[in-house]
Length: 530
Image 1 (cartoon, rainbow, N blue to C red):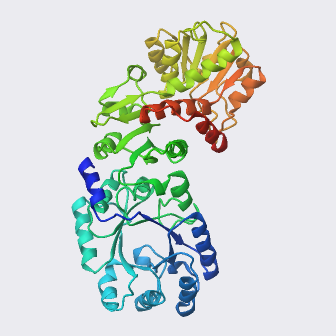
Image 2 (cartoon, rainbow, N blue to C red):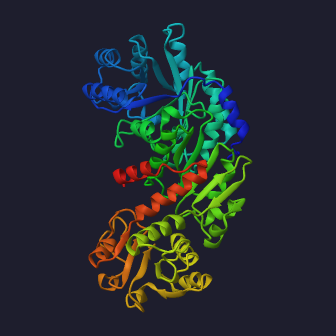
Image 3 (cartoon, rainbow, N blue to C red):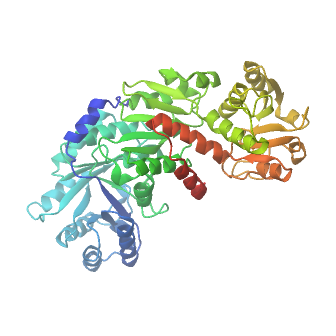
């Protein structure tokens, strides 16, 4: 079941393989009545889909003679007709002959494509032999809801599908790991016949997003998030607007965010808009990764050009790197990885730059002129809550700027270990409550206390906040945490987690592209969506 590394040579053949035409976007219609489906077709056209898939098995009372006529003739887009039986993951439980009769009628009435299951494809294709209209194609499909077989097994499956007389091969497997997608990419890239390769489930998302890069004939995009026809299917709107689906080509560079969970990340929104604004041939996707090492070994081609790294991989990813920036090495956590043209992986930590520069700018605004070359943090008492990846970033970042650092953590040992590295002081989170050796201190929360859904929690009482002149919270969902709200009420300046997010994004963009980030665009998008 191992995944072969996805090498550069695999990619170059992707321009020489079958697919010279762009990957089509197909929207499945899941309405239970003909009228609903007609409405859905027009919505799909409005969104920008190329084809609609008419899922006959979703219709409650299907009357082949009249319904097919209406659905096919009145569709504003080319039609793909599917009548999926229960034994292949669909909803149809009736007579097999009637099912195939309906598909033959659809062909006669002018459907552009029919999807027939491998199991019965031989007999179906024999039955329409020499009756096929010119612009009509048969998709022969195989669905595996358990796993993604080995490359060899998938290759044999493709050969079996081709042997039935298929015009288009469709293979849908299930992702147990994101590296399963690589085996499907190898098939679509090298296939001499039009091929649809889909890996279902959240771990298979990139198989859908990157179809145009790897020569897939079409990919599926749902009308809305609640109306998906298979696990892990994105919406058509997200494919087009969030991931710039129409701009992805075989030579497009792939970036993304690796994490677990990762679906909530707003990074694809920022980076894809930024790439598009300057015409960069690149896409930024969500990578749901379980095993970091396996991920980097599998997607080792230079076309996988870099990634952002979030929880829980910021520390585990370190051992996969060829080179680590000196501050990132000290912090012991990375969040930004760039693959150099020679294939080497170089890692950075931009979290500390994001948060520290945001805090410095706020202090400058409060304190007026600061001597050139001197940080407004110099000499300040800086209390960091939490000793995880973000906590480490702030402890090292603040110490580097000359602050006197206090590290507080739920377990004292972990706080002490971190504080000792920068000559700081350690304590438990409880002790912070009564710690105020001086006024005008700075507080940075990197714990998850107060994060959605527990928005009424706060790591420190309002009473204790009186001794701080500035409070930063790394949490950005919600933007205004209870901690920040109460800090404002005590008269402290606040720096939002979104500020760290935006600024560390500027740095990552610069590392990825060598260009300065479009700061206004980033801010505008964060304001609108976060």
